[in-house]
Length: 161
Image (cartoon, rainbow, N blue to C red; front, side, top):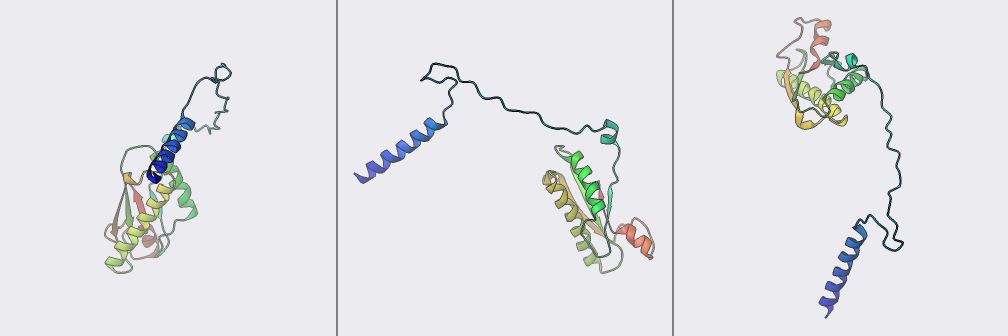
């Protein structure tokens, strides 16, 4: 008996939910046709010059010594990259690099942390993570040869390909 009461109550709840979710185009009690209230669907858009939209963007992001934190000027560049990448199926490779200071293993890990920082920022901007490939070259592919600070600064980078 208790089981049949529970079953009946369960059935009543399901029917109540279904009745509440049903959509009718007319109000049966008054005989008048139902009209949906108007909703303001205007969306404010920013006009972007087409040449600015297609101009090539800088594809190298630089980092401070032994750091994988993004600089403020880097964030602005990555936001522009994210605007272009959003909704496109094209795969993008993020190549992390380091200078020659430190061990090979440390520099590979640092390059990966840098590339992951760029990837994470792009994902937060709405880029599909499945389209982003992270690879670290550490110190193996320097942009500039030399053992001075200017050369090292050019090698602390992530290249967006």
